[in-house]
Amino acid sequence: MKIRFRSNFLAGEQGAAGMMTALLIIIFVAIMAIVIDLGHLHSVRNELQNAADAGALAGARALIRMEDYPIVAVPDPPYCQLARETAVAATQLNKSDGTPIQTDITLDVTLGWWDWKNNTFTPKAVDVCSLDDINAVNVVAKRVSSGGTGPVFLTLARVFGWDTADVRASSTAAVGYLKENCTFFLFALLYKSDPDSWFQKFLQGSSYMTMHTGTDKSTKMDEGAWADHANNGFRPSQFIKNYFKAIERGEPFDLPCAGSGTEVDLQGGVDASILKSIKARLNELRATSGTENDQWNHDCDGKNYEGWLILAPLVTNDQLNQTSPIYDPDQVDPYGHEIGPFVPVLIKNVYNPNDKDAPPDCGPSQGHCIEIAYFPCEVQVQGSPGGTTPMIYATRPKLVQFDWYPSPEP
Image 1 (cartoon, rainbow, N blue to C red):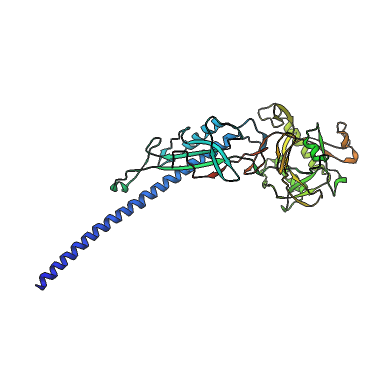
Image 2 (image 1 turned 135 degrees about the vertical axis):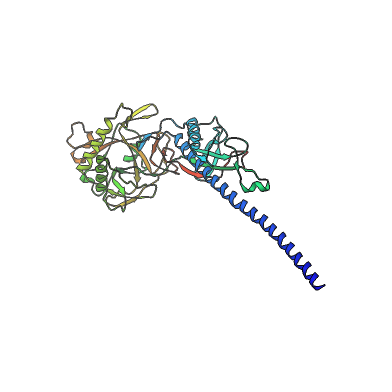
């Protein structure tokens, strides 16, 4: 009896072990299915995200026609249809799971407004296309059973009846007003709110204004001064000379970005080398007039403006040979534009005291002077977006959101 009891006991134990083994195998297969297929889905999701990022950035870049030249007048943007087509083309250059991604220009590309202050995206109707409403492009790259590229096929999960899975990725890129200027600024202008001040008269768009750099302005300025980023190891004059030398040699020159509050060094005085380089640069730009790469003529509300277009930072410290933070004033120019920490300036000429065609206020007692003019229209500049000055657009779109889907997407 004891032997038979033990035999039955052992048989039952072996049966339970077999059942446990079978259960563990099922659990192991399920876990393997989850791990393998989830890893696969994660890989597909990353591919779709890269495609959506590429499409959104390309589309946002196409909203405002980006020129190679650092600063140009904005030529009647936004280009909404071009942005949609560019976004689709850039997205479809990518593959997901070895399959080209299909993107629908109507369902998968949405134009709208990105609020840089509140970090929110508001989609706009297809027939809306203005700079007041459109500054961002959203792209959805997807593998779904309802159409397009089709769903993602699973492997081991099929054992449990899961044959396919839908995967989506979303990306929103935005262009916007300049937050940081990454271009060369030759000088800073002294900001004053007094209506009789030089700066306020400069904004009026007189036929010419002059910024003096004479030796009698060696300690205090009334208009502007040579400027560069503070603490870069150079005085402004040397930094400017290094820039011109690099340009003449066709060599790259590292220009740090600057925005409101960035410290700049201010320096006065005549520097014949800088003035000579400015004249040479003006001659180079004049030579492009009328060519396909015209960098001398700039259209503004149907009127032509001539000159070397740059951005000049504003400062409030009139003491030279010191540092000063770039100032962001709360003011609207005579044309209705909000003024920010940088203003568009046209450099038109450089005069010596004895030049016969020098303006009357460029005489010997005033020293050398630079003829400049205010450019009262929107410009686009190499720099990063996120600022609040409607007059200056940054040319570098930025990825801002990754979880917005058009209805009825989840």
